[in-house]
Each structure stands twice: as C-alpha cells, then as structure tokens.
Image 1 (cartoon, rainbow, N blue to C red):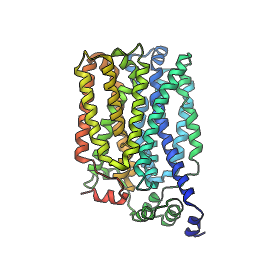
Image 2: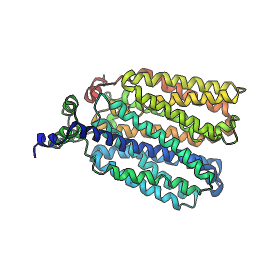
Image 3: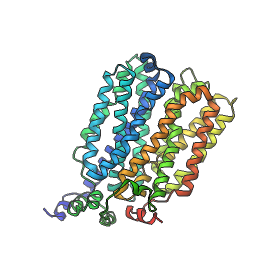
Image 4: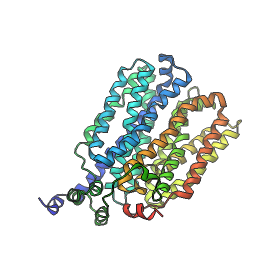
Length: 442
C-alpha cells in the first residue's frame, strides 16, 4: 500500500481524534504521577505510627518516589532515544502497575520505601518518554496547549489524591489500601496506550524514512508540520551533548527552572495540611490543603488556556517573582492573621502552578530529537533532586529551623528560578521544532 493510499484512509476527524487520544494517554501518565505523590501525604501520619518511623523516616517515605524519578528520568530518556518512544510508552506503565499492586502487601518501612522507589523510576521514565512523544506529534499551533494539559492532569491527580485519601481515611481504611488505589488508573491507562504509533521524528532521526513518511502522512494533518519532520537529520545523541556549546543554555534553563519551580511546591503541598495547621488554620488543615491544591489546579488550567496567546515567557518569569514575594510576606509577618496567611499560600499555589505548566513544554521544544528524551530525563532528575530534598527536609526544617526561615529559603529558590528564566528562557510559541533547536544554539 502506498503512503498516499494509507493517508487517504484518515479523515481530518480521525486525525483529530488521534491527537485527542494521544493527549489524554500522555496526560494520564502525569495524572498518575500527581496522584502517587499526593496520596502519600494523606496517610503519612498513619504510616509513621504503624511502622514506628522517626521524622526522618517520614520524610524518606515521602521522598521515595521522587528519588526513583531521579533515576528513572535519565534512564527512560536514554531508552526512548535509543529504542523508540512507542515500546517504552507501554512498558513503562506495566512497571508502574506492578509497583502499584505491591503497595497492598508491604509490612515494613524498607519494603514501602523500595516499592515507592520502583514506582518513582517508572514515573521518571514517563516524563522522558511521553513528553517527547507528544511534542513530536502535536501541531506547532497547539503544541504548548497539548503539553501543558499534561500538567493540568498532574494537578487533577494531586488534588484527587487528597480527596480520595482523606475520604478513605475518614472511614478508617488501611493506609495500604489508600496507596494502592493508584492501581485503578494505571491499569486503565495501560490498555489505553496499546496501539499508539511510533514518533515519525524519531524514525527520521534513525534514518527510517519510509516508516516516518507513512506515519506522518497518516496522522499529522498540517503540511508545514509534516515538512518540518522531514528536516530531521540522522544524528546520534550522547549525554555529553547536553552540555556542548550548542545546547548548554537550553539544558541549564530547563533544569534550573524546573528545579526552582517544583522544590518549594512539593515541600509545601505534600505537607500542606500540617503546614496550614501550624499557622492556625484548623486542627488538621484539611480544608486549606484542598484549597491550596485546588487553586494550583486553577492556575495551571489558566496557563494551558493562555499559552498559545500570550507566549511562554509571559507565563514563566513574572509568576516566579510573585511566588517569592508572597513567601517572604509569610516569613516576615509572623503575626499575620490566619486568613491572610491562607491567602498568601493560595496566591503562591496559583502563580507557581502557572509557570509549572511550562515545565512540560520547554524541554521538548528547546532540544533536538536526538536529545529530547535524554535531555527531558536529565531535567526531570534535576527537578526531582529539588523536590526530594524539599520533601525530605521540610518536616525537619519546620521543626528545627522554624516556619519563617523555611519560607525564606523557599522564596530564595523562587528568585533563582526567576533570574535564570529571565536570562535563558526563549520564546518558542508557534515555532517549528527544528527551527527552535537550531536557532537557539548561538
């Protein structure tokens, strides 16, 4: 069958449905990530009591998945760049399903740590597999929206985890059952990914031109997007290339920006119920915790809706300065009324989420195909170092250093991210991928 004949069997409506399906199954991976990282915060107290853990053990369990992401991101990216997006896209979910089921059977802190670590490896690989795949199929005019929708799904998963977790703990459900609820969306997503085609850009970069043409002509509607795919060059990608003269700016930007965005959020949001209770907002801070994460969801939805209109930089830089300012206010105004403290946390959550919506967009856009998976994986690892450090040290910092110092440190991290973004963040809205990766090398 010729390429033209294959393409002729796909109507514009079929191509549209394919893009929607791909967007949903990519976003599903981010939903699971948010769910897994959020659900542990709802039962960490019960786990600590049941397994007789110290405050350091509590932080380690909270950070276990994040530590796994540190390893899984680069590994998944290397595998995706070497063997293709398609096989890893499904195998990764299979690994996650196994880890999710094992949560039902853990009976010690080290077993729980290892299982959560395994799940983290799968989640880390998810970033460096699914985001490049989405980037390489999405039309330039919708690429930012498709990728940022994955962040919307992350926050839905995170907020949903708090709701499910607190609902189940309210009826005295065992914490193993609460953690294991992640199995349900994982199994659904696994079957939803079956049959997704290989990335035509990856195929072109490997010299498999005929296959790339067939898939591109079948599923990619815009002629300009198809033409840009055929500009791909056959080049091997190596880890050292991320720090070459051509790519070090892009690597530095996506890594530092992501690190500085997620570190304060993970630290605050994972333990938001106890943090808000510390500031006098209820006995357990539940309403405030759901409020903070719900507002964050609203922030990333706004970013998703605006990204193709106002551009990437407008959603990246100002919000980081806003986060820094409100955290300084919380730190220095120790006698502030609880309602004002809550308002500051809500502003922080909204602004932080808006720029977080770009963490899934930039890595795929600023790096070439041969480095897209590996570079995304590296940035994922760097970001999760920050998230793990924040999650692990946050309980200790609040206890030993005090809330004021803790919030000032978080504000300083936001300032670093804002400065680096101001200097290094490119404007990539609507641009062809090959154009971005070549023009921004100077």
